Image 1 (tube, one colour):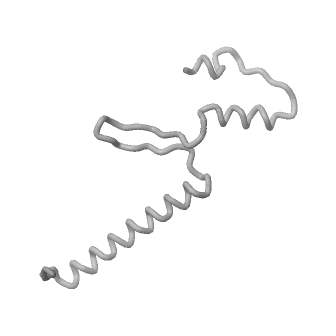
Image 2 (cartoon, one colour):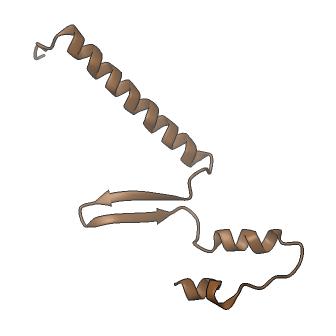
Image 3 (cartoon, one colour):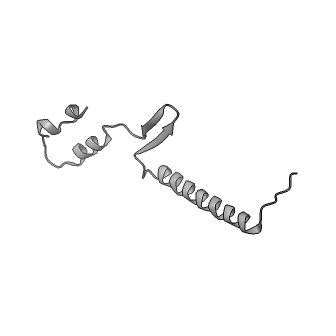
Length: 83
């Protein structure tokens, strides 16, 4: 097993950094598991990607399902005009 020549202060600093990263990762995973995340933004070698966790129509479907009366979107705000 190789020996580690880092000082106690360096090891404590690394430990603190790793604990912070672990807490951040745990919090992120809990948010995903609890449905508090709509999409993930991921940097990849071929560029940034956004992965949605539900269909893109979900917010509109919820809006329509919760309306107590009929409604109509103005033409310039229609979903298909935004594509």
